[in-house]
Image (cartoon, rainbow, N blue to C red; front, side, top):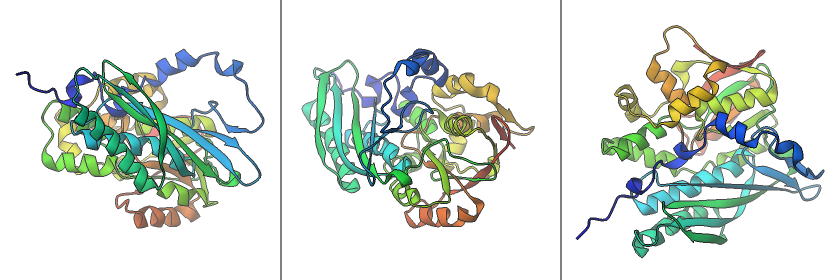
Amino acid sequence: METEKRLTELSHGGGCGCKISPALLSDMLAGLREQAVLPAALMVGTETSDDAAVYQLNEHQALIATTDFFMPIVDDPYAFGRIAAANALSDIYAMGGQPIMALALVAMPIAVLPVETMRAIIAGGESICREAGIPVAGGHSIDSVEPIYGLVGMGLAHPQHIKRNDGAKVGDVLILGKPLGIGVFADALKKLALPEAGYEQMIASTTQLNKVGTTLGYMQGVHAMTDVTGFGLLGHLLEVCRGSGVAANLTMHQVPVWSEALSLVQAGFGPGAIARNWASYGDQVQLADGIEDWQRKLLCDAQTSGGLLVSCLPSAAMSVLEAFHSAGFAQACAIGQMVQGQGIQVS
C-alpha cells in the first residue's frame, strides 16, 4: 500500500515563499496599470503595491478587498488552513480595517488527497475566520495538481482611518510586530530538519491574527502600515520607501528574529525566495561592514502571515508598542527610522 504523501511534498513551494519575485512581477504588470479604469471612489489601487484595494462607499465607510492563497507550508492540514486564512486577513488589518466576511479559494488534487485532509484544510481556515468574527460566506473550488488554499477577504474602515504604505515621513520610527524566520522554518520543515521548538514558534506566529491593525488604524500618529510577507522585510519596506519618497535606516541587532531560526539560517536553511528577493532589490540596499550573510538572508526571508510594519511619529511610538504588546505581540519593537534619501541602509 502506497504511503500517503506529506502536504509539503505535493507542492513545489510553500506559503508566501511561492510569490513571484518583485522584479518579475513588475515586468509582468508593466504598462497594464496605465490602462486600468480608475473610478474616483477607488482610494487605493495598484499604484504603490499596497496590501489591499480600497473603495469608498460613502462619507463614513470604505470597503477593503484583498485575496491571498498559496501551497502548503506545513504538513498538518488543519494548521495549513489556519495559516493561509490568517495570512489573507492580515492585508485587511494592514490597511487599518476590520474584516467583515471571506470567500474560500480551494484548489485540491482530489485523486491524491483524502476527503478528510481537504476537509481539515477548509476547517482550519474557518476556525481563523471565527477568531476574526467573520463568516466564510462562499467561495470557489477546482481540481488541481497541487493543493492550494486561501481567502478573498473583505473589510470596512472609515476613509480617514485607512493606512496606506506610502505615507511614511522623514523622522518616523519603524516598528515591526512579529519576529523574522518563518521562511527558514518552512525550508527546514520540508527537509525534515525542523526541531519541535521551531515548529511551535512557526505555528504560533503564522496563526496569530494581526488584529492590532484595526486599533492602529485609529492612531493619527501612524503614517504608514503594511505587513511583511513574501518579499521579506527589505522588500516590503522598500515599497514603503518608494511610495513615500523617503529612505530607511535599519538597525540589525534590533530586528526581532525567532530564536529557533537563528541556528537554522546559519546552517544554510532558507527558501529559494531569499535569493530571488535579493536579486530583485539588493542594489537598493546598503549593508554596513559587519553584517553577516545569514543576517542579510533573514532580512530577505519570505515571511508567511508575518508581522505588521508601522511607520509612526516618534511621539506615537510608545503608544504603538503598547498596542502591540497588549494584543499579544510580545516581541514587537522599534527597528529603525525613516530618513531623507532613497533605499535602505542596514547597520
